[in-house]
Length: 170
Image: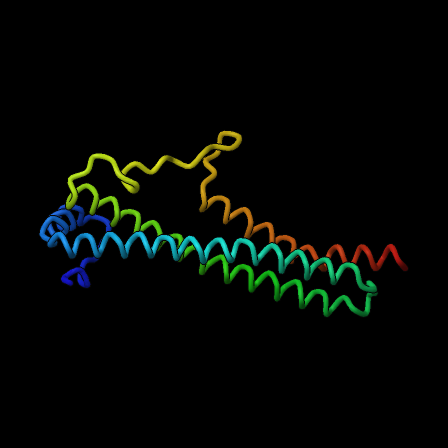
């Protein structure tokens, strides 16, 4: 298939359109099918992480807070809190790359629908905007940002809460 060299970048829309129009029907369908499959795979990975991060973070923080809180344990709690925050931040950065890949694939799918299949409407061309919540757009990317940053802040607050609990117990 001649699509290996197809690079979708900003500013080359006319070139993309002409290259997409030049694809054979078989190559265009194969590229479109692969695009749909890859979008499903990026979404599946995102949803797994979105379930995993809060579950592990909440469980870990709960276990640490439910055990004996003493001033002597504070260095370990600080280490675990920082470790959890850094790991969660790393997963968030990786997820941002995943979101970028998904956006690129959606753009490619829309270009195929418009320039190769001649559609005015399609699953990529007609994507509805993200719904609003309290006047703010709240789509997949924004929801992921809220979940990851909530987990990061919770990990960072763990030592503070442990310090307060240790002070109250003693």
